Image (cartoon, rainbow, N blue to C red; front, side, top):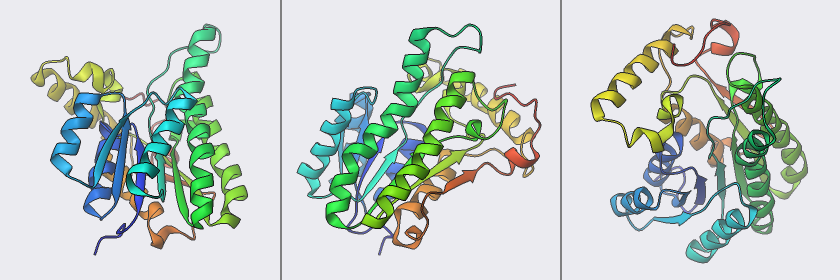
Length: 269
């Protein structure tokens, strides 16, 4: 028996990094999963590899109508919705005195409003069932300076606060809402994202990843890097029956970085 037998999940940003690892783990634990992302080719490859318990839905999470369509497609395909992992995200640009209006809008839409809209459209389905688990991907950048860019940190702080507020409102309906704050997780996002990584030579990707892993390891008390599977494991707990008494919680998965890491650490250095 799997820990997610009979459950249906939506995972945004599901075609790379943390999202991809979580899709694979959830399927292995018995869930049916709607993989949501923008990379249709990769989505099709994942469905072919993982089998009939998966579907792919192309969506840009910066657009509310596309998030709603992904939720609706999941219910149409699988008959219910038990788990939402608002995972999609990416890097942002702009500092205190030089960010642009466009940079602000993009950061808030990609990182914050995508989470809000996901909860907005998933919660009524889950509440009608009397059970649901919403998991939002936040960041240690919401907790501590020098862990992410200016706009990124602000948006992720909003995700953490929105998680707690939503959990207060939805908990009485049987829907828990929690977030995960990853620390240094070795994914291609730190050197341009998965879309850039696929255009790079394999040796270049490997070298960049090795440098990143060494950098993250130096910044954590456990002296090792985190991987997407570490966040997937945390999401599995929060999505399962075992985690259903946890609500309004920010689960920090960072190897102790926020307590004992170097305050001057910058990923990739």
